[in-house]
Image 1 (spheres, one colour):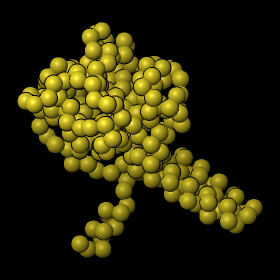
Image 2 (cartoon, helix red, strand yellow; image 1 turned 90 degrees about the vertical axis):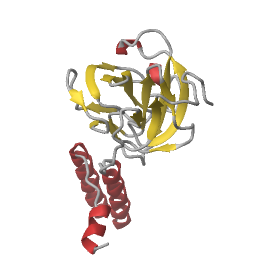
Image 3 (tube, helix red, strand yellow; image 1 turned 180 degrees about the horizontal axis):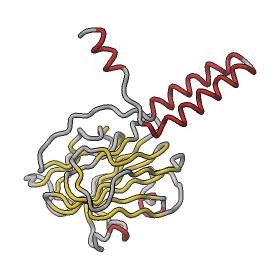
Length: 232
């Protein structure tokens, strides 16, 4: 591998939404350094973390309509049957939900789990509980997308967390989205829930690390497992 290739792999692109925060951290580091030089290095480290948080690496997404792809980087924190949020309009029947928890070191760019048409986008204000808690799905501030995919309608919900206070979604209702396509991000530490229609079989386990745009979290047409079976 050449030096140029190594540099390209090391220099991961940063989302423009992070520029103001990176600039603010950098400016604070300079000001603090003028007061006491060790503070500059602490501020510089925090500036580096901020740039790392807003990183936006390229991903290689499996292109197969049987697969549901993870919408977020993080750890699979829950799998089981849950009634989806009312605002999604998915009815009152339980659907298999797969939750991925993102900590402050995860890449927070969110990606579409399937290709399809975005039928609706609904934002709901709420609390900022720890996103690892099960009740965060219903009580925290959230933004939900309903995607009409090749194998049925899927809900994907961005959930704010204890530290995360801002949900960003740049997708538009009524438009088409590709599997693995970026649709938003959350600042700083949060969770993504995916609600699966009948016929989707989970292909991950609780505690497994998922990579947005790459990890297969569920599959349609699976033979051995039954959806809506709670895994704990």
